[in-house]
Length: 128
Image 1 (cartoon, one colour):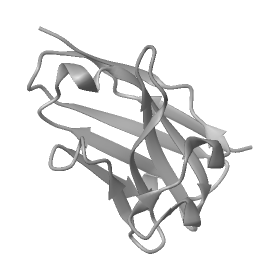
Image 2 (cartoon, rainbow, N blue to C red):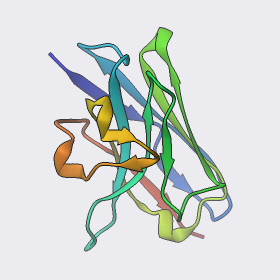
Image 3 (cartoon, rainbow, N blue to C red):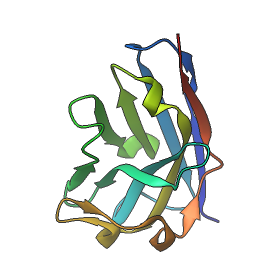
């Protein structure tokens, strides 16, 4: 059974950092795309970053480039999203999702509807 479990969310001041974890079970990261998405109240879910573990393809939304870093630890079957210089506009529920590796390829992330399996999400709040 495919399961994803996020952790690491919390409340930070502007300029702060958090590291989100997405622990996968029921499958290995090989030949999979792992995407990080976020949804703020009243807004559509947006793709923040994704990683194709097999070929190393990585995508970042323009709004997070230079501040967020995605990485994978195959041994722990875990994908991380390191977030620096967080701003109030980063406040959202962050979720990880998985699907075939083509969902993160050629420097792009597929739409959320293409990802089949999702974690429950973790809240990130940035405020002073």
